[in-house]
Image 1 (cartoon, rainbow, N blue to C red):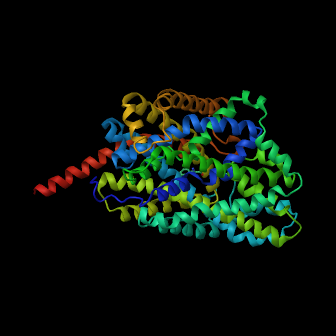
Image 2: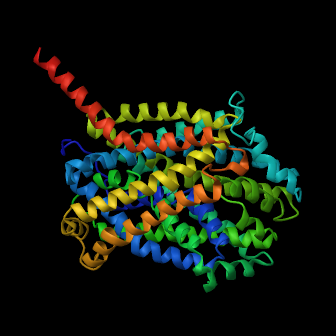
Image 3: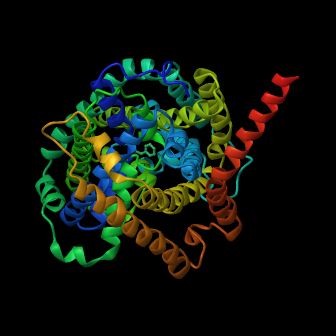
Length: 510
Ligand code: PHE
């Protein structure tokens, strides 16, 4: 990849905002508060903070610095470190591709809920209607059956979602730079508005106390540690080909050590704000038990609407609140979604030398077509399985391999020097970096991976979601197969590129 034509962020603020935009997403809004509630609030917060400082921050800086040094997307940058590392970058890129196919659908659901928020006007106090609004709209069968039926609102919103994603990244860093300033601050304003309503509700104080005051006995639950480390990875968008690509558009004057801290702490701040919103509204509407029980999408689309219709006696106020909430989720989701596409298209255009814009169109189109699967009656079940595998297995295994490769088979001094290149005050200490990348990260990720596998086989009989009616075949197809394909894609894609190149060379000679 020639250096001369590579676009840059224009200013360090643009880069910081784009990276924050990627990190801050739906995961902050409901995954974080949900996990915190599951593990008794404050104790989870404490471990999360620890994991972010010890593991998250050094890895985030590591990825950004590799990108800047090598001036290439994830596969090319890792190849630059060591020829044998290229497949790791492709595995991460493939996993990002799988994730964006369903992340776009969750984004579409959020758009749909914002559009349909007027329905909350007539639902005051009606818990049953509120909690089933989303499942009725998406026409889910709740099982892996039902691929013949579609939900028109979801399809329309999905088209809108892809259109918006493409619109934001159509000109790479330039168009991202223009739009990102709004996308990062809007959700914070919306969340602040909701937090004000939340803390003024009776019972809210109890929620705040639970969220912030640690119950130290909860620390003995290993699941708390597993969930906290997993959330740090997910939330900081590391090991997903994104931060390397974003780093590759940085200029040499940028201060990675300082920027890394700003990105990490901003991500944490939004998680805390979301936590305050969730805990106060759930305690304020006396639905706190649901916050801990339901997980993932069920919380945002099933439980939160119930809280909304109990917010006040005024249907109009509740509907406005609902609109603000879902609009806020839209702004949170979009920059995470397009960062995934940007990571993928950077990887491909760097490797194949293709035009960036055309590559982006191709990726959006292919991923867009695949994402239609999730708009069918059986889509929710498939999404649940794919999401579980991508984040519990593929992402974690890539993390193990990437940290071992870089920690043990690269000179860490050169990466730490790159991180600290332009910084005087805030530095990443080499010892901290070494301990994390060589030991803490690979060990904790391996434990996480093994834990998830053991949990799958021991507690779930080898079938994820058996209780929800998912069978072995769907686990094999949407789980193991995709996991396997992502891992081997690292070897297949470079071979493919080699073939294309030799063909092109041959035709040049003729
Ligand atoms: N970090 C994002 C969040 O917290 C999630 C995300 C996942 C973003 C994958 C990009 C890629 O929601």
